[in-house]
Figure (cartoon, rainbow, N blue to C red):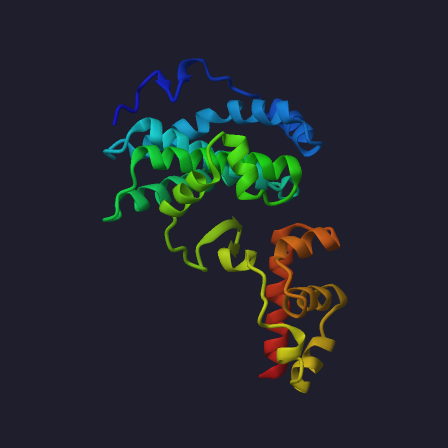
Length: 259
């Protein structure tokens, strides 16, 4: 892999900007206010981070342009999901996201079923467009909206996205805050464990009553109403990592009571 290429995916890597910490903080404040240009500047200012990550795959036979493109998707996801209240450096949060995206790509590429380069390019354009639309509109875009954004038919978009899908473990970590790791399963609505299914157990109800107010509220929203941790965090005004921590503590207290 020609890891020392000067131009990757049309980007002159020798001229990438290097942002100071205060510049990054100022740009992120604007991003949180919905400034699109600030988001683009922040992406460009962190492309060196992508370059440093793909250096780890120098022994790979994969095309460096492909790895850079996939790494950029990981970078964008990191920017869109970064929680400044956690007092964690952006690079600390972003590197695992970029690594994860590249490793998933390499795992998919090593599959016996090979996906053509053009099909993968279409899929990654669609993923990039989806991320942008979600950031702008604050909702999940339809396949039609993604197709319009990319300029490709919705049938081709659907086929390309389906072609690169692979099984994902519910226990795959998406974020780690010290000892509190958020897993894929924490992002999924719980549609089965609603009140009518398990609140009939009186002892469980009693255990719930013994929880402090905040923990009780979180357990009710998560398991009675089937909300995701992200939805709970937005509703009660704390971070998703805090929701995860409080939820785990509450479940431990309930388990202790029921033991």
